[in-house]
Amino acid sequence: MVRLTLDLIAKRSNLKPRKEETTLQYLKKITHINFSAKNIDAIEDLSLCKNLSVLYLYDNCISQITNLNYATNLTHLYLQNNCISCIENLGSLKKLEKLYLGGNYIAVIEGLEGLEGLRELHVESQRLPLGEKLLFDPRTLHSLANSLSILNISNNNIDDIRDLEILENLNQLIAVDNQLLHVKDLECLLNKLMKLWKMDLNRNPVCLKPKYRDRLILVSKSLEFLDGKEIKNMERQFLMNWKASKDAKKISKKRNSKNEDISNSYISNFETMHHIVPVYYPQVGKPKLVFFSDTQRYLANGNASPEISQEDNPKIIEDMGNLTLKEPESLLTKK
Image (cartoon, rainbow, N blue to C red; front, top):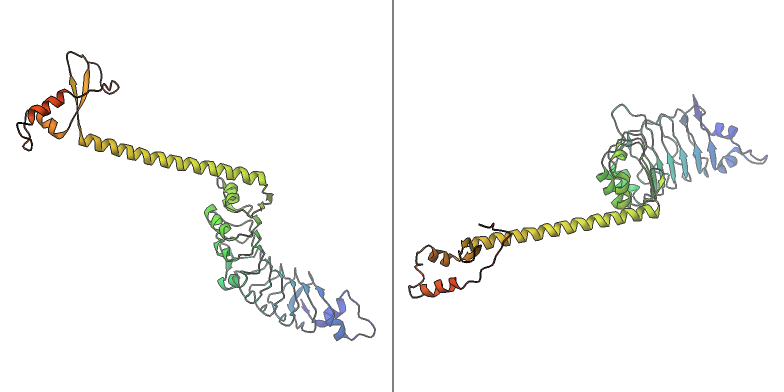
């Protein structure tokens, strides 16, 4: 195995020192170091590389992130495909903008507090034990809320990403090959991520849900690409019109149902207040409907109401005889 030292950097750097330059002067002006796939297993002190901004250490055997504390001008750090199990010792890298940690053994995204300038985080394809999933420390998410714009969490057995709603400035989310299942959870997330314009969820179970694409397009006005396919204005407008028509039908159906309930209630109350009796008159030959009030029904049965005097009875009976009778032929059959 090989340790990354200042001597190794000086010997293998693409830049060649001038004759009058010392090694110290030479190391100070280095901005890019590329030691990818060199069997590096440890990082030694790089504090003399004052202007180092880009460090390539992918495809090595590094198990710990160490000795980068003084590389305060570092903006890009490539550590994918190593043996790292914990994100640590990065708190002093205030200028770090892009961090690549895919293909390691990281189980929890943590230790990034203080990296206020971090714009991209790539933690895809962690080599986790069977059945485990990648987790997020709320403190780290909170610290990245205002800065992070690109997040790659693909192939990590993740089944819930609602915690990511705090990343209010996120504009690209790549989460392919996970276990996301519920469209409703994604709708809630998109309602929070108002700046997200690209999302890739290919090869998640949720992609097979009915109306999956339609529902996500409708809930997010900022989304321009979904699962690698562009969302055209015509597609979005069609879905918006379809939803508006569907909502209008629901409102109309609800209104009609309410009116029907009111109508049924009125008829029920009317029948309770009035006794409906079919009466047959031989001289006419058709049944008629007569509505008797409680008092009239009492008189029709030959019983005088205790509340009505005998003097009023002839007048009431005479009024009943003068009733105008209607012929609801649709309700009564011919005799």
